[in-house]
Image 1 (cartoon, rainbow, N blue to C red):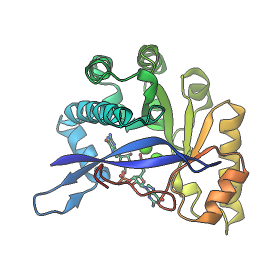
Image 2 (cartoon, protein in one colour):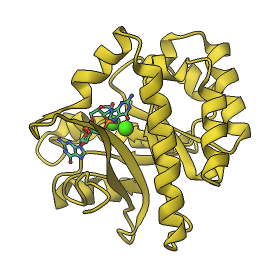
Image 3 (cartoon, protein in one colour):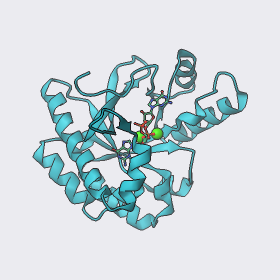
Image 4 (cartoon, rainbow, N blue to C red):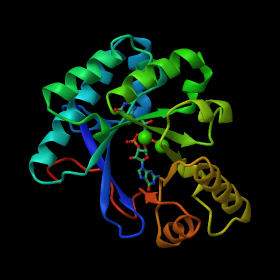
Length: 231
Ligand code: C2E
Ligand code: CA
Ligand code: CA
């Protein structure tokens, strides 16, 4: 009953799709959907999460291989991993296995982590990230600004993309404070040499705002909704 939807992420200069984020969905037999926000924490509590993490990585690599075979050579795919999934002892092995099995290059796989990982032991997180980076894997810091936004972790971990949380973009065109926060977060990313992604873009004015302030990539319902492969 688990499947994945994919939401395109575009280069804001030409609106071309450059990456795709995989988002898990649970459809019950009656057609109703349980959102990941609800069932991922439950899966973490009952010990099923490591299977879901492996499924997410393996499905992403398999799907990427199919798109590459269709000619989308430069496309990258991102997978969301919770802090518990990221600390799974089998993570590195699972990633290596899926990359080889589906003949994918590691640099086409992006792992999205959140700042909750910054609450964990830095050297252990760093060790896992470097081992994955060694396979080519790229990291994005998701929901940036909503949690424990530690500059020391940002400085020491091999993170390539900062994703500004959608809550900061909601009112950028009507609220000066929201606009200032969004602009500041974009500046933090740019000044640290990271690529900044604005998520949750729901209208043209927000798109223009983040683009004009130096954001390179964007994602949101205004551009593309999450969709099944068939769509
Ligand atoms: P996220 O990683 O921050 O993903 C973005 C969420 O915002 C997605 O919700 C997406 O459908 C939604 N979204 C995209 N564009 C817009 C927009 O323009 N406006 C608004 N209001 N929402 C937008 P979704 O798919 O329900 O996922 C919720 C969260 O569940 C994700 O947040 C992520 O943290 C988690 N999640 C999703 N898939 C997985 C997975 O495979 N594994 C794990 N561990 N977590 C996942
Ligand atoms: Ca994400
Ligand atoms: Ca996010």
